[in-house]
Image (cartoon, rainbow, N blue to C red; front, side):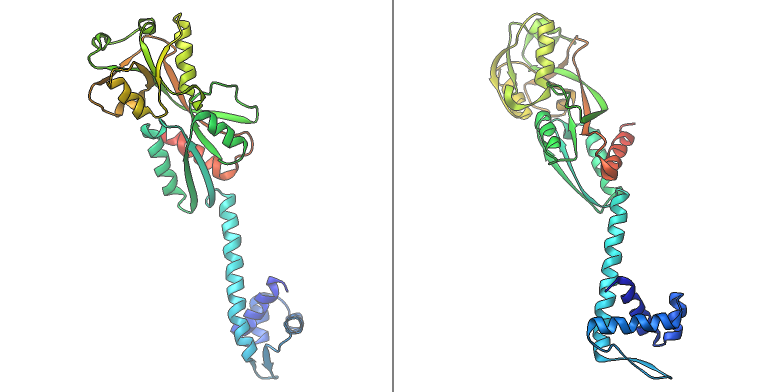
Length: 296
């Protein structure tokens, strides 16, 4: 049984005339009659009572009409969903993001705009570090990721789109003598204790911090590690040490903490979108396009 057989049947059932149904379907009447007879043989039930002057649905035909209409409607919905998915208007999109990303206004604007433009896409968001996002992209657990520059070489089959650049700011206690300076040199931090993300956390910011410190001629003395930026800032307020975080985190106002620019050309990080090269599809392309537009 093919969908066209159901369409033929519905046309005859609605017109109750093989002549009018054939005109509606733009086919000849004899082939239409043959198709209906073949359909009845396949179903195993007579669907129409007919004479030379009239055509009527049998009880079996009335029931079959309900199901035929439902099947045709469902097939059209399935086809439309496929067409919308092809255009990037339906389906599922899984997006990863780093801990600092939600503090960037671009993130909120891009997510909000994407949901407005593509309400039928099931958008799921996953908070994870940059390295974990790279692993998730390779394992096809996510389709896109908001990442910071990774501390490892990016696999060849992944690509990055830079969205914006953020300054790296020094986080220190407000009663620190350094807090009185407008800009602070990295070498001024050589003898101070540091609060940083754990080495194994996969956070890209650690790589940037270590690079700046090495250039300044020292290795940071890590007094304590913490997995959350809020915890790091709280530990700085408690006098445990200093830290460096991307500028969006300065929106987390906490008493006893100040953010200061670093007098270092390398004190910058990028917010990027990571994706599988040549394997994005319409859903990914649409999201990247929206993110770039919202970044203008």
